[in-house]
Amino acid sequence: MEKIFILFSVILLAAAFQAQTLSSDVQELAGRSTTFATALYRKLASRSDDNFAFSPFAASLSLASLATGAKENMSTGLLEVLNLASMERDEEPDRIPTSLQQMKEAVAQTVATGLFVDRQVQVESSFSSQVKTFYSTDVKSVEFSNTQATKASIGEYVTGNTGNKIREVLETVDPQSQLMVISAAYFTCQLPFNSSFTQEERFYINKYQIVQVPMMIRSDKFYLAYDPSLKVGILRLPCNDGTAMLFLLPDENVDYTSVDEALTAEVFLEWVAKLKKTKLEVQLPRFSVDYSFSLKEILPGLGFTKFQDGVADLSGISKTSELKLSAALQKILVEVDEQGGSDAQSSSSIFMDTLPPRLTFNRPFLFLVYHEATKSLLHMGRVIDPTKK
Image 1 (cartoon, rainbow, N blue to C red):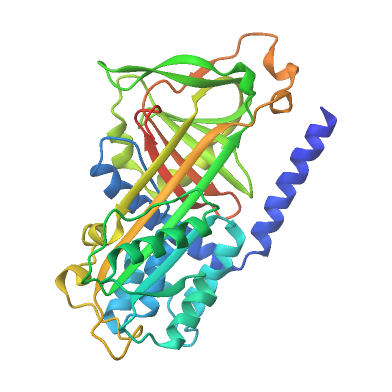
Image 2 (tube, rainbow, N blue to C red; image 1 turned 180 degrees about the vertical axis):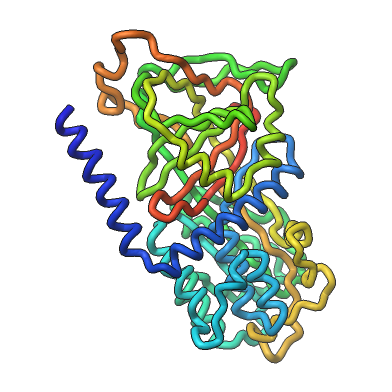
């Protein structure tokens, strides 16, 4: 027990130290980015009644890369979508890019962002250098008229930058394309559950659909909160590299869409602040969510219509062509399971003196992955049916 306490203290001190060493600009950017993340969540949630996931962090890098190549009002418009426009300073033109660069280094996520430009377009070398330096965004030349070769090239890029976890992003390629922005994110969290205790349990998709799922089980002290206004339980579980997950379970007979619609940056921060360590038995299904969406199609709902209206000025990317954004796509894979083995759960945490209260995720729930030091939302999603990928 003493060793566990010392280890926990070291982890807390490390997180506190990291928060102190991050610049005030990064802290401000993280807070502002959370507003964008929750707005994007609400838009995506309203379009789907199934499992979905996305990476607001990867989306931020994609839009910031486009803003680097945009001119005048368009750049500001993209930064307004990201809730970062107020951070612009004439005397500090690299303030936002530098902060995003430092943020990317701090969160250490498996995220790939690539700009694929038709080989007939002459890309400004200064643009390629900037987006590579600040966002690790690669600019690749492809021949869109050769659709199969382009599809293979983009697939190889994504696969190589996600540890072979994400293999295919595009089903088809428009041969008339000029510019595609592709982002991919892979996140895995092995939770401190012992796989030998995992068992098949019922999961209630709705009143009429029930499926059997592998349910992870653990009794221990967990960080827990409850939001009485939304009638939702909030469970925090640690992951890796300074990240944690919040699992949000609406009460029985509470529609999960009410939580979808209420999710804001302020609500998220209130939930984190309310977390208290509580003796609890947690039952949580293993799950995996593989999801793709068009960021370009979502942007009008966030207040940016220039790409759809055909008036976007991307002359910072190329001065020799009237460049049009053909597609901005994101694909993500989120995998959550147990660590396995006896180290994941000691016997003292299996058997309590008294039976603890139980929190069973046997109905649709939400999940939020965040960076603990900055409270920045990295990946988000919803699970309606854990048996579906």
